[in-house]
Amino acid sequence: MARRDIPMNEVMETIYQWHEGRRIQQISRSLGIDRKTVRKYLGFLNELTIGRGDPLPDEQELIGRVKEIMAERAATCQAPGIELVNRYRDDIKRWFEDSNMTAKQVWRLLKENYHINVAYTTVKRYVRKEFPRVSPHVTVRIETPAGDEAQVDFGYAGLMYDPVMQKKRRAWAFIITLSFSRHRFVRFVFNQDIPTWLDCHERAFAWFGGVPGRITLDNLKSGVVKPDIYDPLVNYAYADLERHYGFVADPAKKGDAEQKGKVERAVAIVKQQLLAGRTFIDINDANERALTWCKEEIGQQVHGTTKQKPYPVFLAEEKHHLRSLPEMPFERPGTVHPDHHIVFDKSYYSLPTRYIGKRVWVKGTYKTVEIFLDHERIKMHTRAALPGTFMTDQTDYPPEKLAFLMATPTWCRKKAADYGPHTAALMNAVLEEHAMRNLRKAQAILRLAGKYTDIIEKVAERALLYGNVRYKSIKTMLEKEVIGKPSVIAAAPLSYLYFPICSLLPALRV
Image (tube, rainbow, N blue to C red; front, side, top):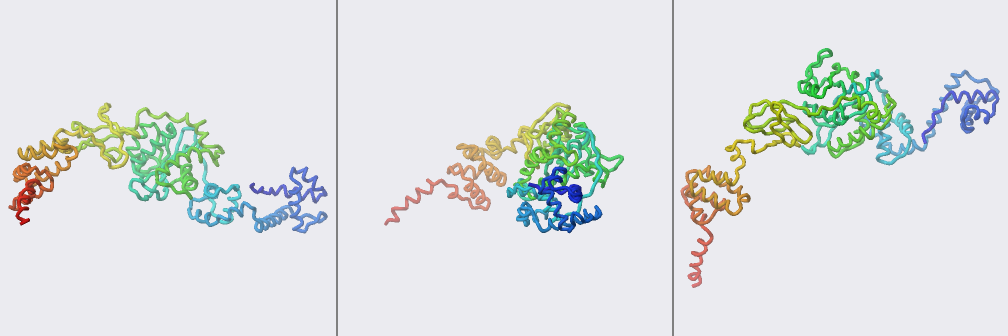
């Protein structure tokens, strides 16, 4: 149970009534406090050696002397909860190496890691005494109507494991806070570039189920090209997003974080209550925990300013004030390159040859990428999971290019026929047993044919004569032929080698 703070007016009234001759039971009934509490308060007078008949000191002097006695008692006597917390002093000290650690987070971590059931006020008193810190800076609060504004920013989140690159990388927290309800969206990312900035906005709007009327943002390049308090130049891609979703981008004054104090405070809260003292498997694990934290943890705690729980307030009072999500996903323009691909979100998507050089619109969802020309959809791909991925539909290439890329058995037979009938017959023999299984060998023989164009027909005829279609044998015959030493044995079938040797066995026995 938390220790009860002693109200000084209660102490002074107890002392005054006792000094006026009232009994302990009467004082207890008059003030509505327990008789043990009355005796505790009167104990201060015993330590001050003030009797009932003695004159009382000046009130302010008496209060000061009583406070000194209370401080001495607190210094010499610790509550059981304080002693329990002190057992984990080394852990608490290690946690406070993180500049974002707070007493509230220490209380959470003690419950989470050691199942310590002590009051938050106990932990707070312990932390204030053992790990004092400078009081935070105080700012002026500005309130906005429901659905009118959200504030957005990036905050450094430390190192997180990247499952794609399989190493730890610097990560940032994208945080957008609805100014009215204080409900928020948090996502950890490895980049602060334009595609990431836009993607985080789209995910946030989907999370909220709507769009705020205005977004106050920092002057980072992903959102604002030229910071200016009167005429900010918004990044063209962000301007497209702004028009598509129907909000107004309102860049904060350069260097003035207090213009978006709600989200600036949110960055500290994410570090203190979500990241401090915790480890995650990778960035995906951190993002899953972040969404749970936004809705079920921080979203269900009473906000220090509004005195209400953010998520319930969002559902009851703010969500229906947000603008509806557009029916169509956000589109981005692009040009089809000579390699038949268009670049979208750092990956490549193919289109047929006739669209090369055309300016098209690309629309991406979480699962698909759709490409439009003159408001007509001309192609759809599955969205790439990783940057730098080529999502290629082989039928988009012209036939001659497709045959070269695919190198199918049919293409291999046709290519072999260009070298002559013996090479074509050799290719048929290679692919006859199992075309797909022997496709790699057929391709390798064609590479040899391209290197030894003048003699491939002669060697192919010899290989067919002896029924030897092994790649290494054909390669050896081609190399021997080049240096003027034709090899019959290398290309001879086993039966050819077996009978001459057998014919010599009788002579060997004699």
